[in-house]
Amino acid sequence: MRIDLASAPGSAERPNEDWVSASTPAAGGGVVVVLDGVTPPRGDDGCAHGVPWFATRLGGRLTELSGSRRDMPLDRILARAIGDTADAHRDTCDLSHVRTPQATVVMVRWDEARVEHLVLSDSVLLLQAPGGAVTAVLDDRLDRIPHVVRGSVAATDALRNAEGGFFTAAADPSVAARAVVGRTPRREVGALAALTDGASRWTDTFGQGDWAACLGVLREEGARGLIGRVRAIESDPGRPPARHKRHDDASAVYAEL
Image (cartoon, rainbow, N blue to C red; front, side, top):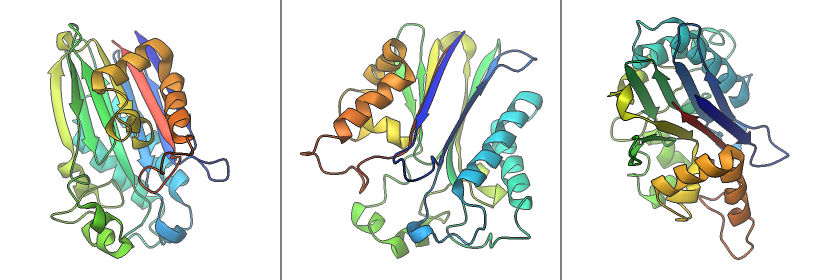
């Protein structure tokens, strides 16, 4: 087994709001958890702790439960972790605020028999078959919202964790039922990768290669290599900022099973 991961902040002036972990529990197999904290406009989220605190708390709980509770499917683990994280600050913070700290989620767990996955919002999971074919597991609900709507804070807030909109892990455990989940026989997965949108933009925003090429960069150059490629493209003064950000927090995990 080989696991490689990296995470880089979008700016030296702001904390990294991504959270990444990879573990090999004593029971065997492995677990990958990748979160992309959602930066609130104008810093207004009704919370005294902030997004990095939330991502760390939620990510730690997801990693623990994924390794220790093999009897629980990943959507139930996400629901439990969201509830536990909410309980940790509901007495001090306004969890009803539409921009209460939240995050996108990718979770992968494998053992000798199967590979389980969960994706919520716009982070990306790539599964590579032993023969080389790559499948992208995506939750594309945010991408379906027109850019003119996403350019308005009020319009985006109206669609956040709402029917007809998009969903993130925030304070409501029931959102876990909205995640994209699945299982694949272990023999059908040779490698996998999880990317926040700051790293996946090499493919889905900059069009430098398809998902198979992206996974190839991770295999040959590692997670730091992919992020370095993204930063080089972003630094081109002739290229307009992607998604209103020249640089975004970027994280990637690559695992050969």
